[in-house]
Image (cartoon, rainbow, N blue to C red; front, side, top):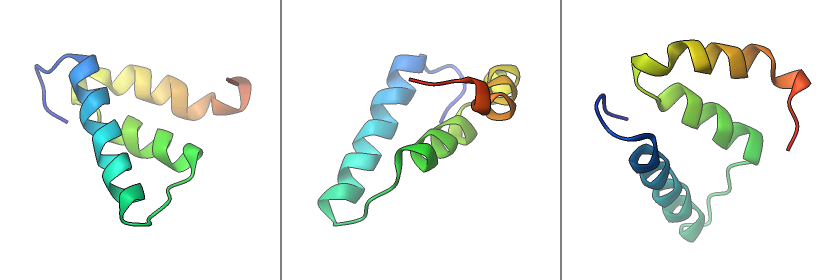
Length: 61
């Protein structure tokens, strides 16, 4: 993802990527999608990424 893009734009781009993969018959589990998305965020989100990654056991949907 690119610095300077709004988080919504990054999210939409990632969602399209996942949907394209699914249309090709490639399924990515939800937890893997979350990790890929977090790792794709720009550097400005490093702190948020670390908090979400290392506290995932305490988070639930």
